[in-house]
View 1 (cartoon, rainbow, N blue to C red):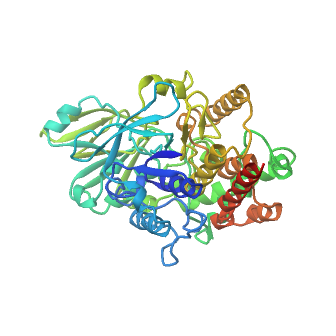
View 2 (view 1 turned 90 degrees about the vertical axis):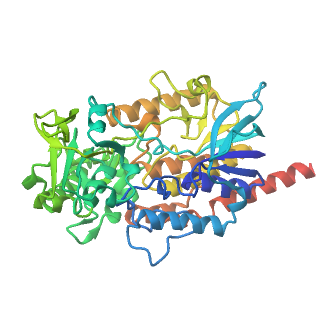
View 3 (view 1 turned 135 degrees about the vertical axis):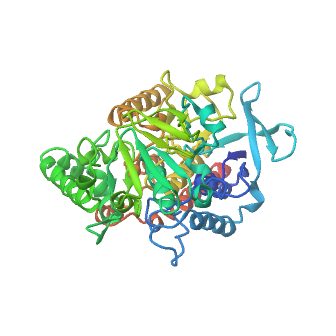
Length: 504
């Protein structure tokens, strides 16, 4: 097939590599001038590092370089992706600085017409493709709240930006910075600008639990959360094995005690009681919508007064003070200087190059993506998604989704009937929405159940790891290298099937 892949981050590059191995003609469209997606030099914010350790945040066939630190920087991750492109000779398939402005089904819906535009050039003519893979990412379109008084603040010299638009701390040196949010990007930015800004204020509507990178400053969090046991501490939609049935049944007191112990250490190690920053609810809520690591230096700067956190608070409006300086008026009655407002307030989940009718065919009536295995839509033919299963192991999850697509296109497994797929997806999204209190990224966020979702895809292909390999993963951090032969095994099976067909 002739396949268009939209996006050249982890998901798009994995799709290109895997699908090309199965004989498809691949074109990757990327509007940035480099590969990387969220790790592109055009989008990575100052102070960006991975949440995962380098051993678990990689493709199956290319470990992160040994000289990288345990938690690589954004620049290092982008360099790693350039290495992946070179390893698999993907450069001929890449169209960088080229944005897909429209993708539409042909009149008989047996293929696609993709219209793109190279930066600085006019819109090109539509190109025909047999299949489209959407890999534009769920962290590509930042949400910037519509603050009252924005125009007034801007006239006074202030500005409002997304965290991904702050590419250097020099942009805010000596300025009064207000960071909105308490997730990873918000805390990363605050910690990075704290030493150079005139003041740094964090406005957090809701505090979330954070996990120290090393519990007790000794035990790497990868041994606690990046294992099957760590994932099993949180209740999945189903309980697929005896260990999880025990942990969420007779062994529930043991499970709660384990989580409680980690939470107690986190409170002490991050000074949460001392700083008045203990989140509401139990530590188990760390996994309601994401698992967020604490940012190096953040709580230390709060303790030292370099960062001020206003918890359970929102920006009520932007304004200017009596001297004409930009300020933010908070819902707790405080007013703070606000030369630069940095928003770490989440992302839109949308596919901007599809028209309204096609988009409506992808979503339920609440705006949630209806994707079987987070990959296959019900009602739009010749279209699949990769990277819409955001997980703790995003590179591996994307790669296994690409393998699933290769198997689907080759007819290597049988899908359930469409009505059964609809039922499963609707039940999954309802469960996700309830357990995360609506913070499920419109049905695209599988954290912390990364391995459960990978298991489901590989079970469809009958290519999951051996029982002994899975047992090892219960106590040891996930090694993506354990999955490096999955694509090859599928390719061998598909080739054998083709030969049998030809002989018959």
